[in-house]
Image (tube, rainbow, N blue to C red):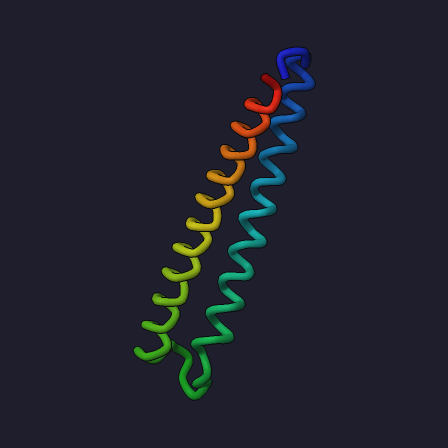
Length: 90
């Protein structure tokens, strides 16, 4: 990336930011859909009933924790692959 001009660097940063935002919005959309489908089933009131609300909170918490754990595992695997690659080059 050091060989990029300042304009190219700005363009690259802009594209990366848009990609990250798109990925975040996709994850958020999946989270909302999944927890709504799993937890909300009483449409006789305009608000969530307490059981639904607690279900949604647990669902969001579980989804976020599992997503974080997957990210950690990915980083661990990536680091191991990088280390194995640098060892093979010796």
